Amino acid sequence: MTVTAPRPTPQRSAGSRAGDLLSRVFGGGSATVFALLIVVFAAIFIVNPSFAEPPSLMAFLKQAAPLMILAIGQYFVIVSGEFDLSVGSLVGAQVVIAAALIDGEEGRTVPVILLMVGFGILVGLVNGLITTLLKVQSFITTLGMMLVLYGAIRLWTGGAPTGALSEAFRQPGRGGIDMAVVRQLPWALMILVGVVIVAVAVMRSSYGRTLVATGDNERAAGFSGVRVWRVRTLAFVVSSVLATLAAILIGGYAGVTAQVGQGLEFTAITAVVLGGVVLGGGRGSVVAAMAGALTLEALFVLFNQLSMPSTIRPAVQGVIIIAAVAYAARERARPRHHQEVPSQPQPNEA
Image 1 (cartoon, one colour):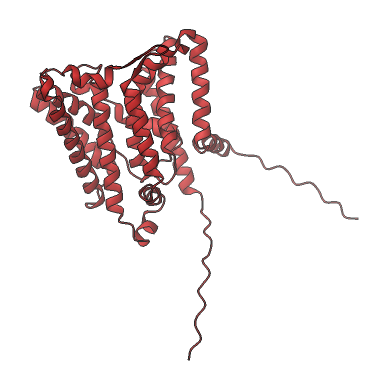
Image 2 (image 1 turned 180 degrees about the vertical axis):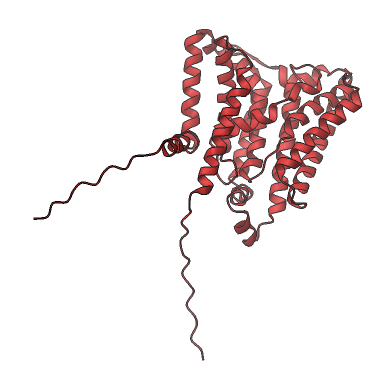
């Protein structure tokens, strides 16, 4: 009788355990970020029970709406396999441009908003075409655009922006519809809901599926007839237009300064990767990206409730981005198993 000795249980390395942790956090799909959102909100309610009151929640959502819109725009770019570091500077530039051109005149509000949208489209086109046609990495392209926008605004204003935003311009970010229970239903929240509906519809369309396929495997998408340059350029345009919309909402409560959007590009990227969108493209949900932004805003509120210093914000964002990059690198290093395509039977020769 032969006795088989039991096989020893293999010891898992610290690197393997860390990799599994990254997979659970960033590879868990939408469920992870929504679970984290519930935990953060529960902590806020424990620390400050009055935060659970409808007026407080509406005020929080009004404040979070611009970042959530920025995250949706950043999602389109990241899921396609690129980055957009210019959105923060674009927000600041748009607020300064609007204040200088409107200068408190209510009648100039609509024409200036249309001009802002056109400028946002132009910035997105430049970012997209340089990245796709000139083959410059999007990190470099949008970093350069960020510096160009900051420099141009400083040159134009001499470092001291002038003018004033009209009350009509500030209404979308500041006002709302008076209601009994919530006190006020913010315009910003209604605009956000509209953006989410459109974004979900776009991602379920043929363009959305093509965008994800491009981020997953650019070469395969090109071989299947996809015009990759067009798909990605449109993603940059979407990002810039939504950054313009975020600038309009931020203008409702922020001062007129070029620094109003400083750092928003990294906050938006952090929100997107917190929502489970993989850096490098090809995987992620637009709703989860939006939830990542809401979770990040709630986390900052919790820090504030706990009287933690505001300097902890960039540290937290840095940790999240580094962990997301590590997870993306781990996923790229993992071998993929492709199914073999059966060969077509050859017709019999005559």
